[in-house]
Length: 161
Image (cartoon, rainbow, N blue to C red; front, side, top):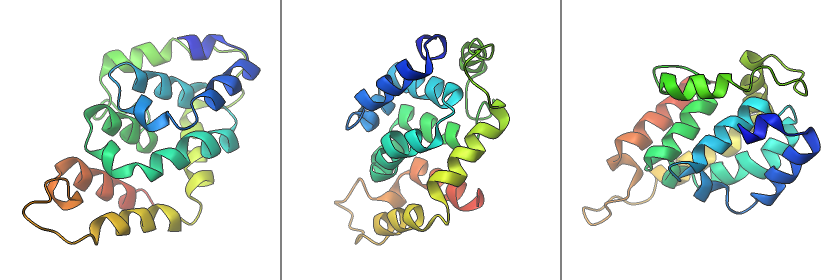
């Protein structure tokens, strides 16, 4: 993939150019794959937090209601887990494993990202609480408790602590 075959400087430029478009990219049929590849090959957790994770957290409800957004969120919680990510997608991501510019072992990389970005998880849990406490009405079809994807993501976020 493009992101795994580029230099560290080029990847930083790619990530910075995504600012304000991350949620839209995450909800696109092919765009979400770019984010998965970036999570796989970027070592700079501060860069990921600043330009990607913060925007994903601010659009948590929209992402959890979108099929491709759910894949991005699931990947952050369970990287390359065939229960959540199709084996063909995992095989595509494995093509970037021979990347010479990455110094981290993949298995630990996403855990480090999650630990760094959420820290005490107060901000993430506050975002979830803000979504859930909105008054529920039968007209409000986009309420968080009505969407099975939201339920899954809330549970996964809580259980991953």
